[in-house]
Length: 182
Image (tube, rainbow, N blue to C red; front, side, top):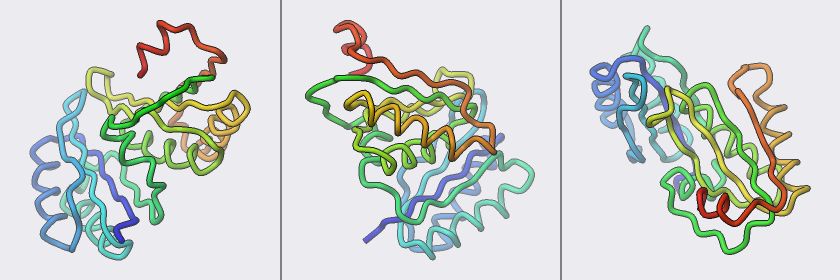
């Protein structure tokens, strides 16, 4: 089972593409996505077995050199993160909404994984830096208390890195707001 995810954010599109090529050639990993993002950056997300993902990300860091903004490997990614990352989730009921904004794109994946592992919530979206000035955000839903717990867990886990720019929890959102995010 491919339960690990690795990702790198680059501040150069050509170097990002070159690094992605080397990452895919260096191990038995699958490409989840590789794409330019705002403002003039590039992200690569891969999945696979933990060892292969770690090795591939390390190779991407070496090739990327000074152009690597940030990289992470999550050994046991929660299965709800992938659909949210691809904006492919379905939500039947919205009791409350949690929104977590990050200063860069790939930190949002770590935030989403942390939040969904911390509380009984539903990930709706992990939006990655397209038209967002390099920022990203995570949207989650559920009952108010678990949503607050998930947001707090993400804030606590990421505090030392300073990547969360703001958060909000909305209890009983207006129907028009529900339509905006779903």
